[in-house]
Image 1 (spheres, one colour):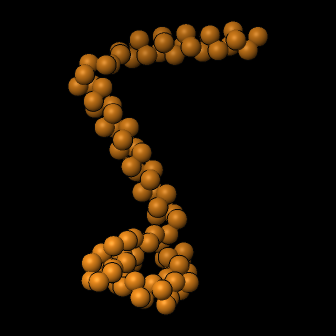
Image 2 (image 1 turned 90 degrees about the vertical axis):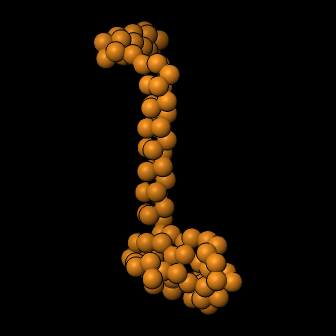
Length: 96
């Protein structure tokens, strides 16, 4: 959906809610809902919403990783694999 066609007043949303939802389910995108001429809310199809949430989660992981590097909380790859191997051995021993 083009941004120019995806801005709708709240009155349009009220009058055409099922039509807008049907359009969103067939043509993934986002609709900006305005109230008194100002953007107030966003209506998205579920697929677009889920993609946005996944992207945000990955960005948070990246930001935390960068903070860890800046604070010196890092391990070499050898240390990491040794730690993982020890955890796997401990886990296998608990199952027995």
